Image (cartoon, rainbow, N blue to C red; front, side):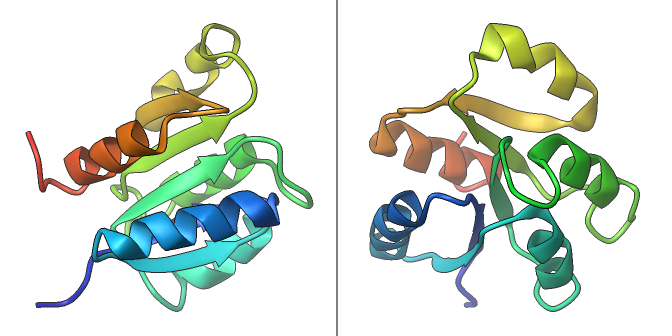
Length: 125
């Protein structure tokens, strides 16, 4: 059975390293890019099972890249978990129409994030 792929889109290299260790320990394949444009390029190469997406990114912010991704039928249904330092109550409505499965404020509990990844890819209900 192929490993499920988790794509992390965040410009914080330390956070990406920490998530790599935790995500791979759960048996998932880890991929990481540092900005929105890179994310769109990666989607053309390998389709992840879930995307962890930061809002504040260089070149193309998380909201813009999510809207662009949703325009393409091939990627439209990939579950997205937003990871952001911005408060959900300030940002949640912005993402309501973009089919975001979860919104987590940074700093977040890694164990809770891993649970949300499992739920997002259908491994837990």
